[in-house]
Image (cartoon, rainbow, N blue to C red; front, top):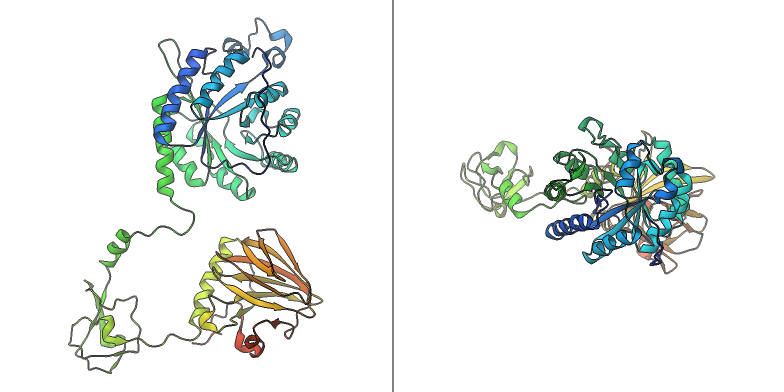
Length: 520
């Protein structure tokens, strides 16, 4: 690049950058050293971005060739890369023309600098994101320079061992840089058997809270990998772009506008297919389809009103009739409220279902708690005791209470406390116990002497003796309580009704999961 300094630097705060759902479209050297050809690529790409309504950036590559290339190779070099760089060299003003076009099209300008001078130039020109190529991911002088640019950074990890990625992540976290990482295979083009897309999930698991993407170099006509990458959880997707003419031919890993359109369409379709990471959307169409295949409850014989009926009095058959009791809601011991003829449908209004067992909410909670622990990847082992705290009664357990797993109680104590979505633990204090909460999973809200605090995974909260506190969660939470010795008579509630309850009336104690200990 012919260097002419342009000062257009904007200060960026390190308050957090949203990398998710970003397409990085790499112009690289496919402009062929021509402003006209580069502008045409940008124009055609912008049309696709607008029509398909995606968030995208166009990426340039900057090298200060007069210093990047050794002086002995400045002329008549036999190195293929140097020939390519020299043949497509553009001036800074030429790049500014292309950059202005990108900004005019309202596309995010991104730049990969390959040397320290290019970092300053890219920042001064107004690029919004810096991208580190895989070949530069261990270039520590360059990484140091980029880390001080005050710009968000995306890092490709092609060819890196996991411990080397650990070093990079640790470095940029230490520097306070907003950054994302991308799984990448630096083989051009990349065959399917080298794509290693399972690494996306591994990176997501290893670096929670860091956006993970995928930089792709497979054949542009191969649309399967992008769909798989979406399913694996990638949030950034990089693709080389270009435009062919009678004289210009693209390499085997760059997409023409037609290929790019198909690739982005496949990406969008994969997002639609994968759906949400939260509760899946169950449509009325799906519900109606399943309802039509339900089995209804029919009388095996004529039965008189007031009869308590059991399985030998009824049978299940298809088709289900409107307002009929179905096999899901059937409960042995139900009482008929009218006479029923043999083979007639028994409707929900025709009987009185038995009362639910008092402890059913606790039994249902076991399934929810196990699922939450599994989702959080917390393993308890085989020996533990559980307290189900139900301060306002078992029937209100899912509104008021908590599940307490007692791990240790000596001069120090440790508990794991689980709250299901929507549960609240009433306000109370301890006279003797000092405790610290540390959130392991989910978001915990607390009220500490009237001050509301929101705790995320890793956050801690000290609760000293005599301090009023309560806690609750909206979506489910698991936290650890480390404290001085726990005493059974050391909890004092603001609600005097709770204080007047016997401890066994507001708690249910079981070993392990209490499979046979919770009575009906």
